Image (cartoon, rainbow over all chains, first blue to last red):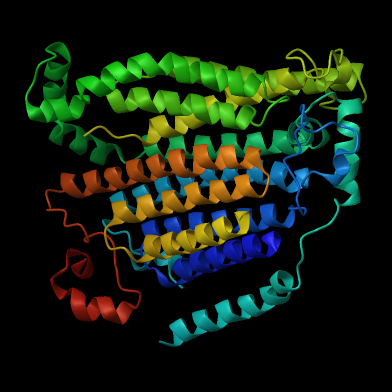
Length: 119
Length: 254
Length: 113
């Protein structure tokens, strides 16, 4: 049930992001939509890794290494999403600096102002 | 209008494609065999208590190296896009800001100034708070990435915390110049050392980025888990330097 | 219990996402996107991924927001150095349809260029 809810949230969030990406004509809003899409996809990936009543895969006094397989959530999606978030920030910053350059060159943030971005 | 209809149709198609994936799903009862293997063996093989760290640094270490490379490429792209540019326009902007620049210098010399200068400088409270908090936040970031194999967190989180400490300094005094040589040196040296540690693993242990060429040590101690704390600290320094560079090249002083 | 919290966070996240797309003021939209990230990090904490939660809280809601704000203020600066008054909605074309901007935006600076 938890997996289902997290998947649903992530999926609706990425749909929101996609909707914004396709309907907005403003580069800045498109980048914001892209970061929403990013968050949604990360949430789907983390949701897939959830195991019923699982805890974090970190061993301490409460979680002995022996028999931990029954009690922890899947660590692989966590590891993947961890790096994906950091890359997401760097790519967002790259897109933003591109938008700033487009604005200084064309005096407009609209995609219509950039011939190469029109569709 | 046709475009709008097409968009709605596309999104509906995606929604229908996802529907069986989300609706049929129940909470998983057990781990997949691969994940179970990692959870079962990571303590014996690597001696880390955080399985996620074991995967990021060791089992999928090569992926992390590639990820750090992508981060470097993106940071270099940001710096290139923000610092290069039309020289004529830059000259014009500098000319139009000439008066402001003098104002800023005055504001730096005399600490008391008008409300305009105060806005440019950041408030007294913010400056004092930043000076007080900067070493503490910095220390916290270092703590996070040194303890990456024991507690949640690691190089990426620690690097981000360090970058946000620098951000606080920038907020307090926007004209603060960062040492670009230090940043570049930290970034380049930690990247090279990362690859060097990986090659040491190839030479003295089972393969590239194998951390077991150092003794595994006592489970749960700070100096344990072979070279994992070293590798994660290097990642932390590299990520911190790169994110600081991104923030530094995007910032703008009013 | 945690399920109820998850549902509540989900509603807030979706509301924040829609707000980030439809609020007119760009700075408010940036902050709404940051709030979405912050709530997402709480969701990660609930489903047992504290590493991801830390990363998302530090990067998604702090650094990304700041980077967005820096870029936005640079755009405003570029608009002001041209000695043209920067109205809040000038550089951005709000309306989704091109026809809409042509119809309504006659007085707008962007339409003429």
